[in-house]
Length: 72
Image (tube, rainbow, N blue to C red; front, top):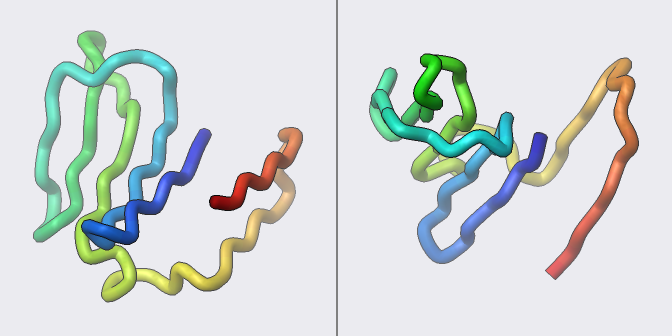
């Protein structure tokens, strides 16, 4: 899973899978879910992210994964 923030558009994309999305559905104003050809969720796009969530802090609990931090 990858989180990518785009300050120029104030959008946050949560990439859940490497599979390409073939369908997108807006489930709430400015929140779009992306699905692959099998109907599996591949990503979540949040427009105006700084107005909807606190982008200054990310907390992960009990994640069985290796953590990578990228800046820039």
